[in-house]
Image (cartoon, rainbow, N blue to C red; front, side, top):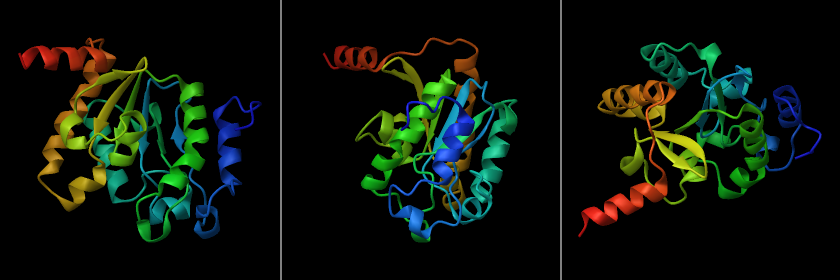
Length: 203
């Protein structure tokens, strides 16, 4: 990433012309992300889908409709947060992003985090989770805010999961309530503190 890039508009322009991986050959439009530059909350999904690829906007399909509903459930509007993805271009046939594609796009997300300095990063889906908690599973961490290297992370199921498994809808709605708790200043334990506590409970 060019060190002269220091605002979100510059990141957007860099993403829109990026050809660093093969996804640039099959996309219609790159999807840098959108939202408030002054937000406390950054949502990180996995990859753009068909609608996102056509409109160059994140979460505008059915999953996006549910995300908007989730935001309203905790008294937030889409315009108050920032929404992006691990990779900025749609993988063919909506397949999972590959590790090399994630690696090439890492610089853009890292720069967005650096610029925004969010109070909380909400990860949506396993690939987003694994950026911050490598090798971990959503089933063990969803809805549990944690501090990782000084950054508060709140893992969640991807909204699209509820479209395929209706039972997850209530789970995700409940998990979203944790966002408001974090914003209201509830103490969040660090990964180290969590590990120590769990070890003590074993003996």
